[in-house]
Length: 398
Picture (cartoon, rainbow, N blue to C red):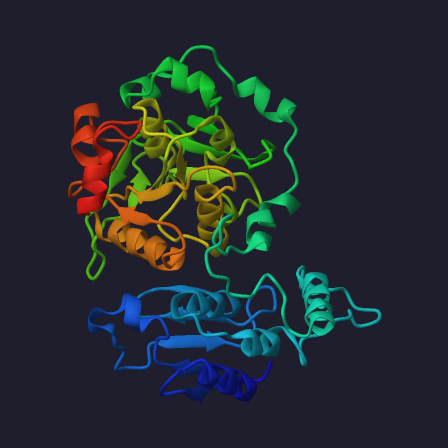
């Protein structure tokens, strides 16, 4: 897609102060009414690139730090404003998007065939494809993108035999010190990798398939390479935090969390395989693995984790779907985010992306804390009694 064509598309969805700089387009942030102070972006802060990693245009705002696929941004604006943006979707997926792979060349875009099928469906139905049609809430369920929910179905399953050797019947001392009970350890199938010094979290999709393994360091102050002590160097301005290195070998320690190769965390929710077993009237949403485990064992169920503060479109569509399963009472989505700036941004993002399709509320933890570090009585002060006892009044007041 040429920058000129991209600029024209942006102008049709309300972009202001557009300009072309080399191979990209600058404009005022389209999310400014929801993410910028005062709801305005006086300086063009959004940069849109004609082609991203998979061929789709991508955007990034240097002010509010939102980024992602331009197509997902158009869908988000559709949700928020209610304006039909089918023509924009067709412009992004249509005429100059290749629908057939060039002969003798390898296809670089893994979503190429999906785009071709989507375009053919649009042409056949006269532009009334159910995926992009904005529906009002019906008796069954509010509108959601079913293709976003099925995004994890293409992720290959990991054989259980690869993870089984890490299972232990005894809880690891680190998890016990963090307040995890043995029943929770066994129910969520946690394991231990002694060689890499990590607690392992098996991650299953909504079908129950094992699609990823996540590992968290349980000895952050020891180097996993040589066993030396990890120290923090004095910060060098303008950096706010000092660099962490091993005092023995001088190398940087590995990241706190490691996931399976090729795993994309923003296409599913940690704990969604537990949802069929829980009949709670509210769906709790947290950031991390330990946050989910602590709320779950305290009785706040069902609970899922986004595994970070940058929430993906697929994760939000899943929340809407799981909160409004047909023939079940609608659940309230309750986002229990960390008490820091990133946590507050995450809570606001989820609430805006759900766009009133299901009831959604946020519950910030006290400053500097998260659900995993809070005690049971602090959970009750924040959320009320589990299983809906005493929670309705707090939510109504929130």
